[in-house]
Length: 208
Image 1: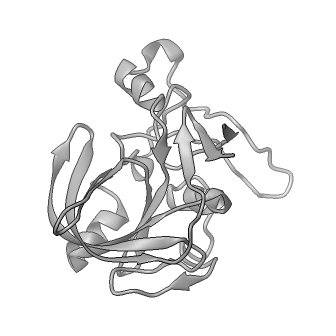
Image 2: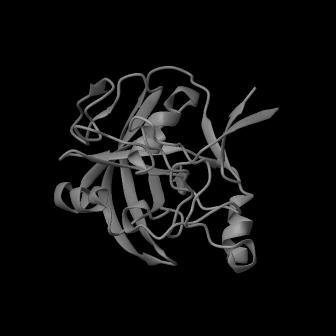
């Protein structure tokens, strides 16, 4: 059984899309969001005022929104980070990893500089973290100012994560509206078996 809550990191679906460059969907461009404003007396809006009308939404984006996707955090030395949902891991000698990210993101600039990055699968307790690194939640003091982090040669990783993979950048090229990143997995750390955080049709989902 799959249950869900509204929200979303970087994932486009049938719900909404915005035009903010930093919030591009690593899957293909733009992202879903709801506005969060914690100023005294402010109202929290659970819908996107910049949403594209239903009749104008891309059928491809709507189709993609029906595919459940894992929610992961990519980090690099700098540090920089981005919530990523379009990811594929291929077993082999060596193992390989592919993902679609935003070419204009701070993460990509950091990956180009360091030539390496870390990938952490997120779990249900990481909803707010996922939103923060997708640019959907306030991050006063910086993205890494809250939470507990473990430093690695590939970038900081959440200390409460179930594991992470250290990747070496191989190549990158434009693919659709995103940037297809290909990397070699150099290191895998598996700490504990944890439940996955998923995203499907504009909502976080978890297995129950």
